[in-house]
Image (cartoon, rainbow, N blue to C red; front, top):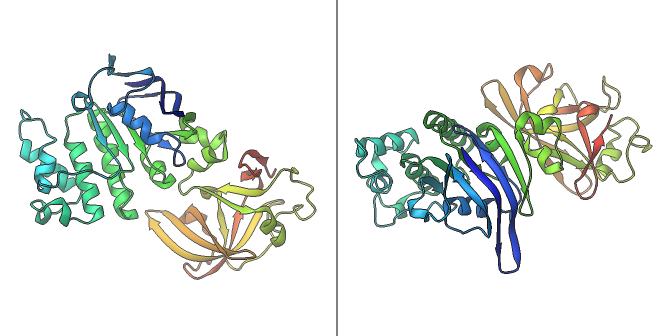
Length: 363
């Protein structure tokens, strides 16, 4: 068990971490999410021993990590920028992470490289000749090859395409569970967190706002950001003026159903279903949000479809995302380039004020 107890850290007059407490069980991945500057990477660097907290304690499997230098901590840490030794080859970079006395050192290093889909032809190349995605995978291999007791991953898949992120996310999950490692996984990508993490910890302004299993975040988000992270592709929204112009919600044009402070409406991407024969503004469900869209792109992963949708407003075309299983696509769905209607049930439509606070639902 990795336990962070009331950690605080500041630099000069700025408070970067403010009384952060979090526990991560063996074999569990906790996804850390928040805007830039919220303290995510700073928290990881404190746990890794690269920064000394002003107050608080860190315990790993019952032992305090206080006073143990970074090089001696039994923690694998993949930092942003994926640093590699420039004078070493790919294989040497990974081998140096394996303990000298570990049996089968070379075999362990090559096995991890193969798992990360790094072909043998690049094993003897230097980092300067690698692409950004290759270098990132080599850095991940260094961490996974290390004999550590906890894992910290800071944006491990940021330069990789969707298909490779899906595959590597599954590999990380399997490795963490097999080795029973507590893991903190930092990402700005809601989709990556949804696929990889067991729980999501939302940070804002150096504070831990909410840390819950994804299902609980869906049921009771405390902020719009917490609601968005519970989705596979994030919180989708439109300005209230665009919704009123479309008259897509019954009663919106009259303003009778909305709080005065409402500035925009939002919904979770996986709440959507399609009425795909043609765009229209009528719904089988009173008060439902129905938006005319053009299907720009469809990405299929098993039975699930991720759809990029274009909806026009007064000044530009806004892109929305929807995540649905194939059985939730309406009859006659024509795929990319098709005109369609996006339908969101009224009780799944969130009402937000100008500061993105959740005011309630449409019903």
